Structure formats: C-alpha cells, structure tokens
Length: 122
Image 1 (cartoon, rainbow, N blue to C red):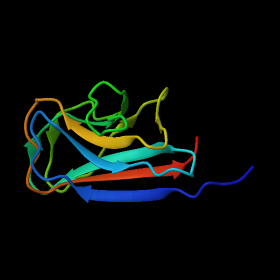
Image 2 (spheres, rainbow, N blue to C red):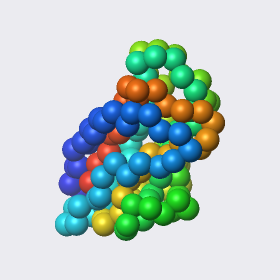
Image 3 (cartoon, one colour):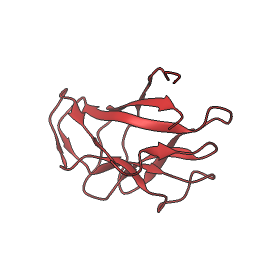
Image 4 (cartoon, rainbow, N blue to C red):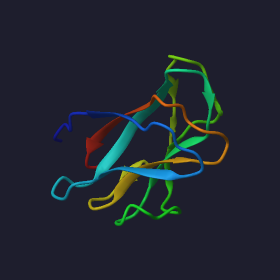
C-alpha cells in the first residue's frame, strides 16, 4: 500500500460573520483529499461557530456536507482549538472547493488562523 504524506494548509481567514469563504479547489489527478485534522487559533479572544464544508464545484454550495467543526463558540487569544473531523465524511472529491463557514454565532477576529492537515486520496 502506498503511503500518502500529510499536507498542511494554513491561512488567515480574517473577519467572517454568517458567511462562508472558499479556501481552495481540490486539484484533479490526485484522488481528492481526506481531512486528517484542523484547528483554529485567534490573535484575540472571540466568539464564532466555524465549520469546514464541501462548497461544491463552484465554491458556493452551502449544503455539501460538514467535514470538520468546533463544538464550542468561544476562542481564547493565541490558544489553538482543535476542530472535530467528521468520522463519516472527511473526504472531498477532485474539483470541489474546501470552504470555512461561520454559522452566525458571532464574528471571527482580524487574525483568525485555520490550519488543516490533509492527505491526497481516501
């Protein structure tokens, strides 16, 4: 069996309130991606409900499925918070967008880092 090395993607999503933000489109030719882990770190304390979602092939779908979520809403400054990866659907097919969504619980802060560990394939 071939071993798929994990990849890490880190981005600052900035301020997001009751909206979703496409992060990247899964490239063709690698068999999609499987989310292995995710975390959120904020520079200042804040309140937000964040999810990683399948945003479909156009990056705008809101019902494509939840890949990871954070069960709480409070963030302490400079403290990483692990997201729970879906046990049933952490896979995202080629050509689909990975997006982060805030569920209208609050607003992310100016510096809100989302770090995602994934591998190509299932």
